[in-house]
Structures are given as C-alpha cells and as structure tokens.
Length: 574
Image 1 (tube, rainbow, N blue to C red):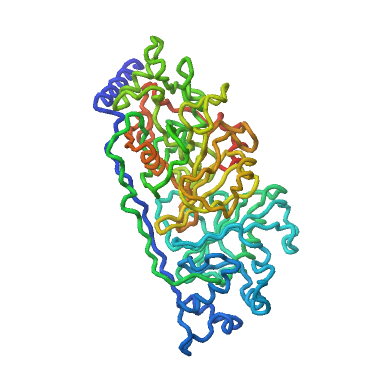
Image 2: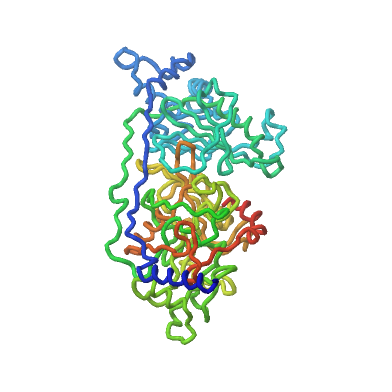
C-alpha cells in the first residue's frame, strides 16, 4: 500500500512538473490603496477660538480690519511656533503636540529672542519632528523616574512616545486587528481606541477629521528595571494625550499621487534572478503551520538597501547563512530536515555535481552565469517568531525579510566578502529615527504618495553612532548608512545579514506589512532586468507535496529549534 501511495505521489509530481510546475503565471504587482483624510479646518479654528488666551496673540485682526480667515490664522500660528518646530507649516493636517502654547507665546512676547525654556512640558523637545505632504510624525523620549508623578515606575531607561497625524492611510487586508479597550479620556477624545499590537500600546483617535496615533513601546507583562510594562505606560500615555495642543499646520488640498511609473518593470528578463512567489514560505516554517502573506503590493519605488548586487532574500532561521561561493562541495543550507542545496557554478564541470544543479536548470529559464548560486529568492515574512505581526495569518511571525549579499562566506572565512558588498544605503529619502546605542535604524518617509517606515537591524551600534546616524538626520536615497553585520544584542549574536522590515500607516496605526514585492521591484531596478517568479511545489496553498525536490524543502518541525533562540530574537525586536 505504501509503495502504491508513493508511486501515485511521484506520478502526480511528475505530471505537475511536466506541465511546467514551478513557473508562475505572470503576476502583476499592485499599487497601494490609499484613503484620504477629510480635514475640518473650520473645526480646528474653532478649537483655537475656545482658548481665550490665544485670541489676542494668534487670531489678530486682519490687514483689512476684518477678522482673519482660517488660512491667515494658521499662518500666524505657524510663524509663532516655527521657532520650536521647524517647518511646521509643511503639515497638511492640524499638528497636535504636548506643547505649552500659551506659555510659549507669553515668553515670546516678553523676550522675542528667548522662547519658553520648556514648551514641551515634561516630555522634552521631540528628537524627531517630520511634517510633510503625508501628515506629520514626532517622537519624544524622557526619563519617567525623573518626573515626580511617575517616580514609582521601575523602568530606568528613556520612555519612547510617538505621535502621527495622517493625511491619508493605507488600506490593508488585516488578519489581526487592534482590540479596543476603554480609556478614561473618552469624554475628551470621543471614540478613542486603545490596544496592544507589535510591542506598542497605541491610542487612536479622530479629531478635526484626521486620524491620530499615539504609541508607547512597552511589554504586556510584569514591570522591570529594563522593561517598561504597558501598565506603567498607560498613565504616561494619558498624561501625553491630556497635554496635546493644536500648534500649527496649513490648510491645503490633499492630493496624494501614486507615481504611474511605480509598477513599470524592465522589459529584459534577468538570466540569474528567480524569486519564489510572495507568501510562499519554506514548507512548515510558518507560525503554527500557517503560511505567509501573499502581498504583491509595491508600496513605493525603493533603492535596494544593499549598495551593490548580487544579493538574495532568504531565511536566516532555517537555512545556512551565506551561499556556496568558494565552497568545494555543495553545502546544506537548512539546519535540519531534507536537503536544500546550492551549487557553485565554478564546479559545474566537476563530476561530483549532484541533483541540485539539474533541478536548478529545470527551474531557471537559462543556465545562470558563472559564480551565481542556483537557489532563488524566498519570502520569509511571517516565518515562525514570537512577535506580533497583524498581517501574518497566525498573527505572529517574522517581522520582515532577511537579505544577504551573494558570494559571501562569513562562517569560517570572514574575509570572503569585501567591504563593498556589505555596504548599505538608504532605500528612500527621509529622516532617521534612532537612539544612540541601538543596533539598527528607521528611515521615516513622508512624501505625497508614501507615509512609510523602513527598519534596518543587526548593524554595529558603535559604527552607527560614530557616523552620526541618530534621530533627525536627513538622508537621500542611495546615501551610505552603514554595513551588514551580525550584531544581535552583542557581536556574533546572529548570522551576517540585514533584517529589513516596513511599516505602513493604517486605521490601526503603524502596521508591519510584507516588503517582499517592494524589494523584488527595487532589485529589478538595481540590475536593470526583470526577475522570473516561480512557485514552490512544496508550499503551494500551504500544503506540501510528499516528494523530494532538492531546490526546496520538506515540512519541518520548528518549535524545538526555536526554543533556544526566542530570547535572542525577542531582544532583537524582530
């Protein structure tokens, strides 16, 4: 009976392969779906009018003797607050911040050259304030224990608080939504939602027709000296919310425009760039047997994060780190289970070549050129991890993609990869969000068609500090921002690779989305040729065929393998 079953499986697999199994139908990339805010500037003006102390200082009589209109009023307000908030007039939505506006204006009237010493109340000046066509972002940090009302909090590090006002938000197909919880400021913020997602307690409310998100990095557990619990974060957030004041912005039409060239792809097909379809994880590596997120959206036109190619996107948890260049024999990429081999083309004439080369030639449209490995790109967003990811079918998983330069042998011979191949560049023009000492950085993008965040992880913190890559630093696409490293809590904490993830602004605040298709598109621009999408026969629709294929993997049990790594990956925040 067993032989019959195996023969049936082999015949089925052979039939599928003979019909072109592995070659995907031409899949078009999709543009992001955006929803505009409906800003009510008249309501914002009315909010200013309710503050009696502001009437004489902001909404003064216009040049024609009549009361100034909304635009003129906010122009006056912007001129007043721009001394503390550079370029605030660039925000197309009302800017709400924890700001002592009355005290600031009073100090300015008394001494024009000396603004209020601490207009941002207890929260200090923002380490990031980025207004732009998509709205505005601001990030604050302060030591809670140094403030009398929070002196009982055990957390010794800086508390990180972020606020975003959205001119538009992205529409995603969520699988895990924000769970709303009651809040004591319901009267002041009608309809406000509070919930825990992606290691942040977030508060989302609508005012003046605009959606605002306030979030604090915290842990849904017991408080510790080096870990802020969400129970401790809640009163801080309430204090932050109660301190919000309308401080500027400019009434203007909201006109987000997705670049029509975003989805254009090179006409020429690359001979050496094959990628497995989005959402198709290595069989059995999804969280609790769930699959990935088959998102074909290209969210923006990126510069690929590695300065030079070739490069690969594939798992660092379930494969050997690095490729087969310079290795005498094919190397097993998987850390267990069935073989997943790559074949160095230097050895193509060697009689010792195994079935991996034959399988690769069947998968590739043409034989790859010399020195290129034969295994394809793999989506690893939503692989098994103990991190909340609302876009993953299970609600948990890997928060981004692992990227490595090709031909770099890091283990046993760290000199196999030259410095140029390790160089990283900014994927987009934007502003850096990063505290000194952190092993990664975030590029915040605010343009007419993109409100996104891109995070790089596992970089050398000392090198980043020395380069001045901290919050507020403005970068342009292609600017050098560091090198690939293996830092995860300490040097040699992980394999040499770049963890790259992307957050988009949604109705539930900042959500991790699958950057795979966006990276494929960026890589095609880098090499000037179009990749060929293939479907993994062992992970189609989350079901694995019971046949061996040397380019892919059989389902594997991953729970035991992850136990020893959970603490490390949790600390790395990915």
